[in-house]
Image (cartoon, rainbow over all chains, first blue to last red; front, side):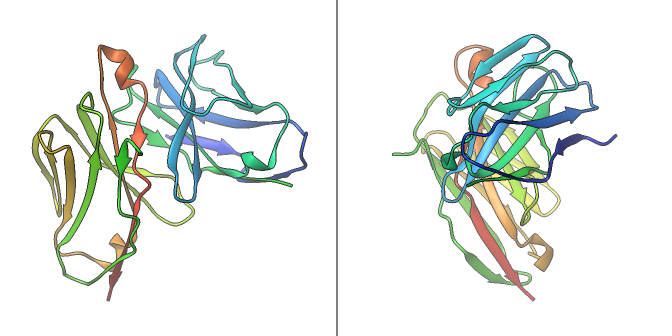
Length: 113
Length: 115
């Protein structure tokens, strides 16, 4: 099992550009989520999904879109990047539809200039 | 005020010491409590997961939850230099399963174990 994989590992964007952060898991987990991690702020939930076709907003959803067409994949789209979106992004998945046993991916470092 | 408070450290201890890491929280609906370890430039790794109040032990690690005080702790016995990392507490809970679909994290405590 590869677990939770994320691509790319690092990305530099200019303000206004769009991009998609990829996340995949091979554990057949129903629950998947995206967090951002900023210094002193801990991890904050952006969006989550409890199954294919079902998504919901977390604490900081503005500027981000998600979709879940398959169990395995949960991409995060930045529609028009802003410097405030400079952060480290983590994808996570867990069994069932709850969060108690989440496995995290290695993260994507995003710099928006 | 943040829902979950955690001292950022750094906490520096000699090898072999007992380490105590703590979080306080304000939301009485939280029922599930987790501790994650995060090495530099890596993703968080789940260490311990407990439900409601009480203790849970796993090797050198012990998690304690005191819901009456809204206080959770992680103890590391015989600490090793390889334990040097940031430790994040997290919690979830609330009415029905919807409260269990989001984790609220502390900001993390950086631990350094000196050889």
